[in-house]
Amino acid sequence: MILLSLGKSNDLTNENGKGNGGLVVCFGEMLIDFVPTVGGVSLAEAPAFQKAAGGAPANVAVGIARLGGSSAFVGKVGADEFGYMLVDILKQNNVDTSGIKFDPNARTALAFVTLRADGEREFLFFRNPSADMLLQESELATDLIKKAKIFHYGSISLIHEPCKSAHLAAMKIAKDSGCILSYDPNLRLALWPSAEAARNGIKSIWDQADVIKISEDEITFLTCGDDPYDDDVVLKKLFHPNLKLLIVTEGSGGCRYYTQELKGRVAGVKVNAVDTTGAGDAFVSGIMYNLASDQSIFQNEERLRKALYFANVCGAITVTGRGAIPALPTKEAVLQFAET
Image 1 (cartoon, one colour):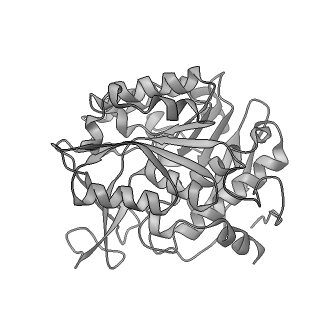
Image 2: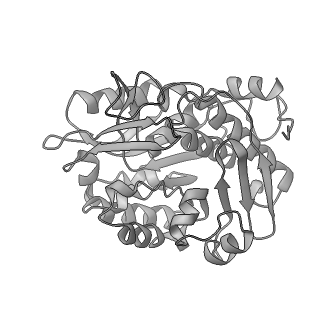
């Protein structure tokens, strides 16, 4: 295990907390995750479920704020009890909610998710359609997006109209305003009409991103079966000329990084995993939190490696609790963990 000293006052972890880093605006879905009260069972076998706020972009927004960064969420929820609950959770975690719309005619999305005994995650979604799919371009919080240092998004919001058009318009606003565009495809194959549609949809905005975080499984999927550990595969098929940073996550194994000049690997940290839901989002929160206040990460390998180790620790801490948002760490928890 490689331990990189984070230090209590290094440049990557603003000790003065919120306000020093730039604003990260997260765009996309927010929903209710129902997680079994016991681990290692299928959805059908679960005796009961615990509800928790979820949705990758919302998880990232909370993760950044919990670390002491500045974040906002742009999206749509139902004008229902779950929708109000989700927005309240964002507010309680100091996430700017001014970009959220409520739909009186559609419900907030629900997802049942479990980690089976064989290690595979199982999802069951209720979106027919859900409110997040119905965000329209005219409802975008344009001024909020323009203020962002980083605009972060996934691919689920590309699946259905009108949200797809709103997503593309929001990306253009952000790009034209000089934002760093951050993309975590967050493949959820069950939500797409077909595997081919998912592959094409995810790749349709690939070349516009400045930062991309992707998992080993997503590399295999996008390259139609190529080896996700082969640097040549990553560099030839996934790295594009405008990309500033490509991160490949390997779960507990850590992550690999690729920039215009650099490439390398940062080892993971070992913990006893209880629930892996939200681990990738916690990782993204960690890297976005650092990047919002220090863009030299793109060129400075020492700072990049520290930021990625910080992000690895964020992900590791998150898997020790149930649900995504409830388990996201504070900066103090990350620094304390890193010192042990």
